[in-house]
Structure formats: structure tokens, C-alpha cells
Amino acid sequence: MHKILLGLLLFSILISACHQEAVNKKNNNKEHPNIIIIFTDDQGYGDVGVFGASDIATPHLDQMAKDGIRLTDFYAAQAVCSASRAGLLTGCYPNRIGMHGALMPKSKKGLNLSEVTIAEMLKNQNYQTGMFGKWHLGDHPKFMPRQHGFDEYFGIPYSNDMWPLHPQQGPIFNFDPLPLYENEKIIDTLIDQSLLTTQITERSVNFITKNKENPFFLYVAHPQPHVPLYVSDKFKGQSKRGLYGDVIMEIDWSVGQILSTLKEHNIEDNTLVIFTSDNGPWLNYGTHSGSAAPLREGKGTAWEGGQREPCIIQYPNKIKGGRTINIPMMNIDLLPTIAQITNTPLPKNIIDGKSVWDIWTGTSTQSPQEAYYFYYKTNELHGIRYKQWKMYFPHVYRSLNGRKGSADGLPIDYDQNTLTQIELYDLSLDMEESKNVAMEHPVVIATINAIADKARLKLGDSLRKQEGTETRVAGTVEDW
Image (cartoon, rainbow, N blue to C red; front, side):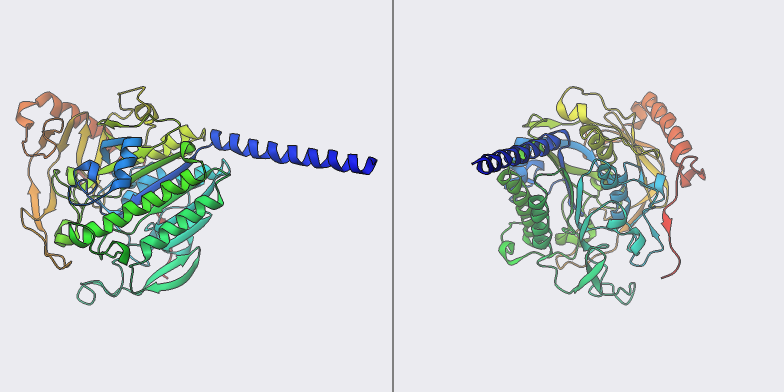
């Protein structure tokens, strides 16, 4: 009898301990919310329903905007792949950390191991971290995702067009087969990318399910809609905008799968989900590119169409939904904002981002940033966003000058335009950047010029032959 009572007592203690452990996990998750960043490639400002697309169905993103917030003035850190991703993950202007342009396969450069990514920052709070999709911050083994804080990785190491099927293979490029990685191992070389969005989505859903009782950081970096465009059979021919629209519809489906998984496991309220893109559309690919409408120009330029991106954020437990915010922000601000939300110390390295949490929650309408800097090429300061103003310095930029790209997915050549004098636009009245008002606002010009001088002291400006005093370098490797 005593043995039975003792057994029941031990069983009761065990049940109580298990319950307490579950409660502790739940409480720990509340203190450290889950973080998901969904990052597309070359998606235009006008390629989501709630941002103006009438010919592409994006019901999940539209609903996410209703449940969360829509940021209308959100910028990529730069108008090109690798640089933009470096800004997102480190909270730094890419030129501060020596990351420029789009890295080629077997580049000698990569994201320096001394930089702290969002994943590494959150590992200090015992987060589980997963990255699925396009990396593009160095494909040497020392620069790959698992060297930068990610526990799991599945995807491609650089852009999906860096393969032997590139339309300019031979005359310009000599790409090797495109590898598909599982952690450090190449598990396939891709010929057909039709299932890649689905595979990335499945990995993301499995990662959420596996870590539903622990805080996690999930970085979903879709290789699409960067050319070449690929879509699975389930969305082929579904859009009014052809293949490009089909691809966006499948990405929207992917967002829906992730959000429904959060609901299924009852962790939606405690998960911050951010959706945005790395830069604007690659316009010289014609019907295979997106739309930046109503913005000017696209990828590879500092004009609004090159860096202003659709951005939708959902966090039901903390952010009141159904709101639109038109205060300028940039993807460099995500790291410090996530640090504040998760009570995580910031990196010791100098970063450029500032927390915009108070703006998201509606407790402030003041930007923590004095201005945002628009660099391109190696280190050229092309423009500055200051309040509602966007000012451009003389520089050379590419444009189609009203021409349309082809309808067969092949690129046409850009023109090279030269901006010969300072131009100023009031984006609150003219988001299309159609009316230069520089002559009417000399005080604004003088104010922004003074801000530019400070930027050049910190970050440099090769157009002025001035080197930065606080910049760092990319990581390097020997020939391989």
C-alpha cells in the first residue's frame, strides 16, 4: 500500500514538474518572442495588392496588412542584392562594413566574421535560428550562414541566375552549375527551379513546428521573383500579369502557409512577422520584372523605385493592426528594433540602425534617424532622405528612359544618364519624383548638404574623393 501511495506521489510530482516546465517555456517565449523575416528578391513596390497591384492576387499579404501595419516609406539598405542583405542582417549601411554590389560565385569576399548578424545576436538569448533561401553574402565555406549564427540552412548561395543557363553565358559569364545546400553540404545542382519556393516554404513550416515551444528566428529569403522566373504547377497561369504574377502569387501562398502554421500551434500572437524585399524591380527584363509604380526607376538606382519597398509587419500581441505608417524607415533599423523587442544587447560594433519600435506601436511619430543615406556602386553617395525631402547629388545612373523591356525574359541594355546638378523632391506631394524643387528651397538644400558632409566623414564618398573614418572591411579569402 505504501509503495502504491509513494508511486502516486512521485507520479504527481512528475506531472507537476512537466506542467511547470511547459509554463516556463510558455513564459520564456512571451519574454522572447519569435521573429520571422520574409525577404523577397527584386520585388517592386507595386507588386502587392495593398501597395497597388490590381493584376496580382495577394490575399495573404493583404490580410497580413489588415491585421498588422503597412509601411509605405520603407527602404532597402541599397539597391542591389548582397549589399541590401548585409544591411538587413547587421543593422549597418553596407559601405560601413565593406559590402558592395552583388557578390559573384567564388568571390574572395564575404560578410566579415567580426560582424554580428541578427541570428548571432539572438543566439545569445538561446534562440533557435534557421535560414532558408538565398544567402548571397559570400559562398566560401567560412562565410556561409552557419558561420553567421544560423543553426540550419537550406538554399542557394547566391542569385538564381548565376548558373550555366544565364542568357549571357559565354559572351559575358562562365557560371558553374547552381548548387543547392543543406547546411554545409551540396545536395543537388539545379536545372529546374520550379519547386524551390515550395521547398523553402516546407522547410520554414517544419522549422516553426519543431521549435514551437522555444523562441526562434526564421529568415526566409526567397530567390524569386529575381530572374529567371520559376513557379510550381499549382500557380502556373493563375495571374493576370503572366509568369511574374504567378511567381508573386506563390510567394503570397508561402506567406499564408507560414502564418497558418503559427495559428495552428497557437504562437501567432507572440510572433513578429516582417515581409519586405531586397531592392526594386530589374526593369530591363521587361515582362519578367516587377513594377515599382508609381515610383521612379528600379533596381540599381537610388531613385525611389530602386530602394523603396513594400513592407508589412504583423505582431498581434503588441502591434495594433489596420494601420498605415508613412514615416521613413530602412532595413538597417530591423536589428536594433528586434534587439529592443527581445531584450537583447546590441552588438559592440558601431551600427547605423535605430529602433523604430515606438513608431510601429504608435507611441511616437518621430523618426530616430536624422536622415537616410543612399549609396551605390563602390561608395558613391547618390542621395539623402530627410523628413519628406529626397535630395540627389550629381552622379551617373542607369535608366531605360521610357523604353520597355522585352517579353521573353531576356534583358535589354540600359542607357547611362548623368545627373549634373543637385535635385530635390518633396515626396509627400510627389512620390513619383517628377518635379525638381531645388530652386524653391535653398534652406532645405543647405540643411541636407550639411547632413551629407557628416555622412561622408563617417562613411566616405568616392565621388568626393573622401574616405570614411569609421568604416570596416569585408571578410576575405585566398584564391579558391
